[in-house]
Image (cartoon, rainbow, N blue to C red):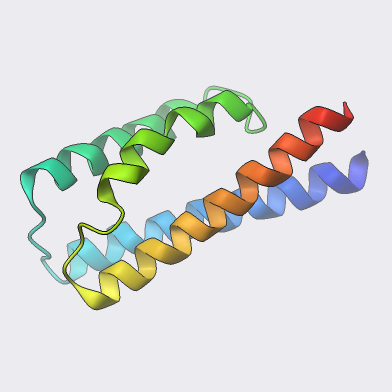
Length: 106
C-alpha cells in the first residue's frame, strides 16, 4: 500500500504539472480561447485550487472534473495547445484509473 501511495503522489504531481504547462502556454502566447472554453478552463482551475483542501486521493473529485474536460476536448484550434491539453488529459485519465484500483484494493 505504501508503494501505491508513492506512485499515486508521483502521478498526481505529473497531472498538475501538465495542467500548469497548458495554462502557462496559454498565458505566454496570449492564446485567445472561445468564451465557453475559457469558462470550462476556469472551472477546472478553480476545482484544482479547492482540491488542495481535500485529500489528493479522493476519486470523486477527479470524476467531477470530467464534464469540463469533455467540453474542451476537441475544441482547441491551436495545435501546440491541443497537444499539451492531450498530455494533461492522458495524465489525469491514467491517474483516475490508478485511483480506482487503489479504492478497490483498500
